[in-house]
Amino acid sequence: MQAEKIRPAAPVPHSRELSTLQVLRELGRNPVAAFGARSYREPYIHARTWVQDFMMISDPEGIKYVLLDNAANYEKSIQLQRLMRPALGNGLVTSEGPSWRFQRRVAAPMFQLRHVQAFAPVMAETAQAMVARWDGLGEGAVIDAADEMMRLTYEIISRTLFSNDVTMQYAKMAEALAVYLETQGRVDVLRTLGLPNWVPTPTNLRARGPLAFFRKELSALIARRRARLEREPGSVPQDFLTMLLTTRDPEGGALFGEAEVFDNVMTFFFAGHETTANALAWTFYLLSLFPEWDARVASDSGDRGVTRMVLEEAMRLYPPAPIISRDSIGPDTVGGIAIRADTSVMISPWVLHRHRTLWDEPDYFDPERFAPGRREKIHRFAYLPFGAGPRVCIGMGFAMQEAQIILAAILKRFRLELVPGHPVEPLARITLRPRYGLKMRLVRRA
Image (cartoon, rainbow, N blue to C red; front, side):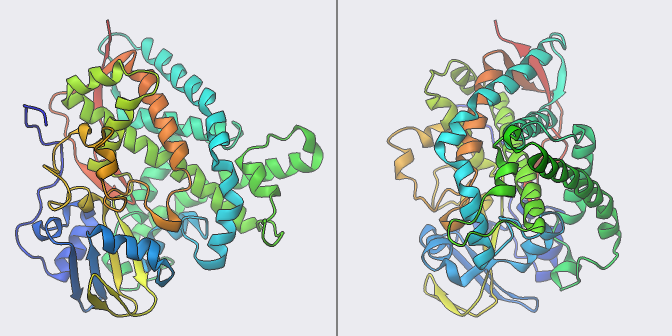
């Protein structure tokens, strides 16, 4: 560990037990601030409440059982579905059963290693263009690193998966996404108690504008590509969108339906840039606190070993998706504890990655945890930045390659220093964002 003990921004766990209603209220405000000290010490927390039976698992073997060994008994939770379905419909992230298996089979070829590696030049070119733009801002210019990373990954996903055919203006998209996440991306007590999404509550009404905007823009994108496929099929780029429209299920020969195409365009468009952007923003924040690691990444060799260590440690402290939730379909026994059907099972990478029984000094930044020889000793189900099991993030290789290319491009030219006094608070709204953005000063390297 570093001699200087700096604890990166994180809520202090509650020392007392909260009532069910208090927990629900805290989850609505900020889920990563809702966990008590007990959550970071115990492998299992099981409770039967008046809302729903609940189990929180922080034991890697128990997590492996739920996400892999007996995954068929655990489906995406109804609470998560209520958060995500208004925007993502029945796409790959939210679907279950045969629908999910069909979508996974069709999407998988686009994220094979050879395809991902072919995207590297576009990723590098886009990152270098941003660095050139920063060069024109003048010495000491202040940027919002969170917004800049969102803008950059938005452009990369547009150029790689959609061949630059997306016409949404970034500023309008970012504003609409922020409103959606703040309204539909938070745990809502009424929704938890079963209130449908269609009920015109103030938050549901606020979300309608962003949802209509996304549907209009992305439906137009799909329609343009369909027309081009019919008019001049030989000139159509063989990208993710074309694949969604033309690839037949290898096991049944079916094509995606209209709704499935739209839902997966939404899913990959937003999941494909939002999570990586947040991971990068948190990485720059940590490097601003630890200049010795910043210097090491800036001088990293071509294999990017140090860069990957830093990125993995950043995602340990600030996992892009801080909550994984499942509902048990039937009764089961997990970690020796009998649970009933319809138990809400929570696996929180935020808690798991800071659990006192799994990590040494878990609240502190130490990329050496992921050094060769040590990385292999971490239990596969103790570190879940991309989930695990059959539903592990299909874009994991894409995201890791993209993030390392971006870090290398920026840090060879600039050091980013957090503006003194700028508040930093991790806020969970499906993904883990910095609540107030990240105001950082650009310092050119000598």
